[in-house]
Image (cartoon, rainbow, N blue to C red; front, top):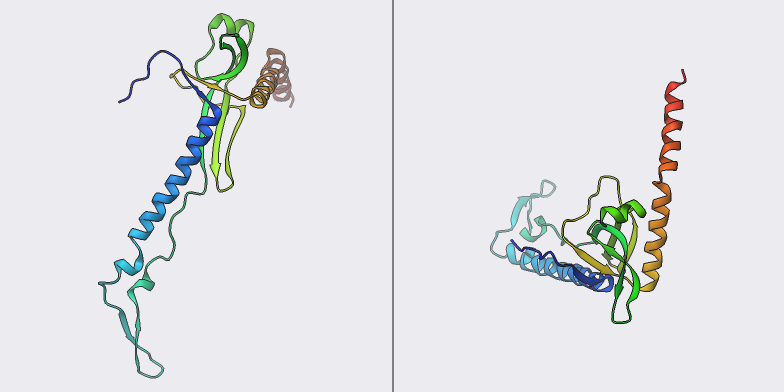
Length: 191
């Protein structure tokens, strides 16, 4: 089994998009090759045709064996990769440029006390129309990976991640959760 080093691995979101797009295309090529290998005309070349007697006129009819096989091949319609992690800010380069990045490692406890860290999702999707990368809130039952991966984003994606992060912090703030709990409690106490 491949062991990941404790040091952070870095990649760009564009790299993940290209990798998934190539995987989608290569999977479909492999499925087409498999379908060509198992083509009905090849498989049924050695099989005898099905003969029957037509009840209308008593003549002998034949159906080729290839018509009893499925006439379609499998195709991968879409491929999606979802990575769960957190929105953090890191400095890069000799000019120490501050960037908003997607990290699978949870921020330190003292950072979470100052700035809440809701779980986010980075989705890379590939389909017949091309590949795309998007960020958003994670599902409640999701959990982050133990591997330390940092995904660098382009400027528009950094802004989108920061906005989604801020919206998720507002939605999960103590005040909002307390008001929701009080509303549920009041609803249960009424007859």
